[in-house]
Image (tube, rainbow, N blue to C red; front, side):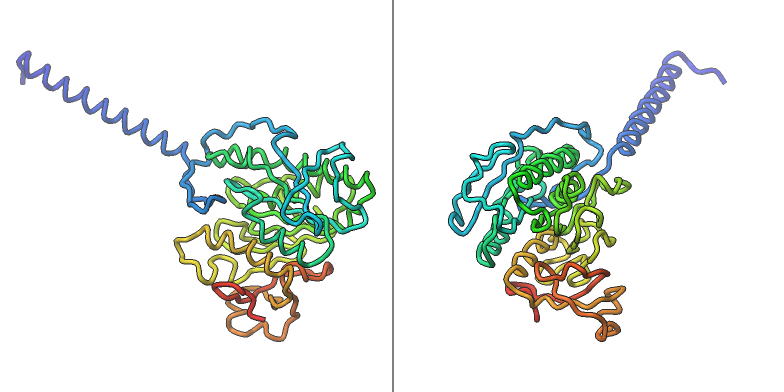
Length: 330
């Protein structure tokens, strides 16, 4: 059968159209394969749909991107800014006092952890250092903020070394970090010249940390004692420290809806803040949430979660909490 010229042209156009459609489909599939979307909560209280494969290059981080704000009982609300290498900036810092650090996460600032600061000021005579790295952490793209973590951790390690040079005892230092800040704390402990006493990792971030070497995230080797509080599906699921606590199973928290992921993620630092002045977070050593709920671990070792946890504690622990303050059930 022979086609007339106009019919042949129509057929060629249809074939070309199908080829273009196929090309667009292939391009779309290729782009889809290169994207890696995930919902991640930010310190701004919102959920963010982010492409973890977008803008993953390393961004330079300098000392000016990280500030160290000192609070003591003599200046409980007005910070003194301490500079690495400048002893004259130490202000009310005393090397004879224990020192406590708090480090925020992505899209956050020290304001997110003010309850921890106030808890320490209330609990005793401490040097309280709030580490503010909101510059790198405020990047709306998660990947660059995550990639800044090792350099921020290195700067915090140099600050710890500076305090030790001024006579502070690293063994009397505790560093608490939330989400990305938990990994900053771990890297700081890993890089510091002296072994710090304790790290508290509050729901350490999981996205883009899979396969990361232990030296580049929080790990049990980063301090004499590492305690981890797991509270959401967005945090690290497996044990990371000497003692790992899983309130309400470690995925969704009481009072937080299943879709309100940032509520469960942020509950980790709310629980820890309360624990600074409370030993009522009674936890049971157990191998699973199901066994805990079924009462199979009621006769096991008990320990208070959070600030009162004894440094020699090891294992995984489970507990129930309330859905609103006070969270501890006693």
